Length: 318
Ligand SMILES: NCc1[nH]cc(CCC(=O)O)c1CC(=O)O
Image (tube, rainbow, N blue to C red; front, side, top):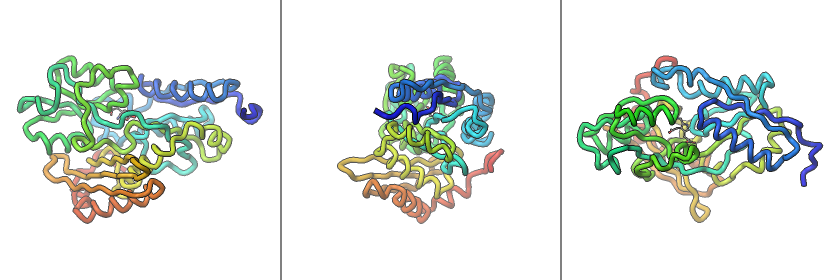
């Protein structure tokens, strides 16, 4: 039994206020309360700029970092102790002074096909409108289904489902993990295999961030760390980091461990799907970060840097 005197009386979790973010923060709150029943664990909900500006594509307003920075500010100022994030939304480089203390066990990493009228992407008639604002999803859709139209779709999970229900789209693509967490699995018409839609870096995993000087917290969070997931997600992030990956980039990476071998797949594509470079590597889980760098180099040799250089830099790009 850990000595409760070593643990703080209070832990404040900073979270965005979307239902999914709050679900995730409550999940971590519950895990921590079970581990440390004497500690009072509360949630500080925050509306970030990224949540407020919904009429522009994320890549135009400066990317997903928007969702993160305000939470980090709360950590900096001591208004909160830890921040819970979707790993998918975490920039590839954690800013100086902060640390990813924990990566939790991955929920389903796949993308989900959601439609009220069709069972699968291949059932969609030519010209059908599919909603997604992810360049990664868009490029893969356009490559496999050039006869479909892809239209932007932003907002939190509920907003996106509402827009589907209002018949603005024939189908939309969402992360299975978010739907499952919100008990919306019944909305999933089909799960897309990684070969059909390679997931985003970190998709399905949660990260817990804190200030790097909070060794006390880093230690007490460790029981929530899932090493297998961390090897996979770090391999994916490593590939993406070399390629300057962010949500503004049509790039996917996905690692899984089977029989103690880590298999890492990655791609970079033109948003129109007309050119895709991809590769796969297999190695020891502990070497995931090096594998990510190596896979990035393989993609660069195939022309990934050309594809990336040709992307129109979004407004607010830094
Ligand atoms: N971009 C927003 C976002 N960030 C994380 C998830 C889903 C949950 C996860 O991947 O952990 C989603 C929604 C989606 O892409 O459908």
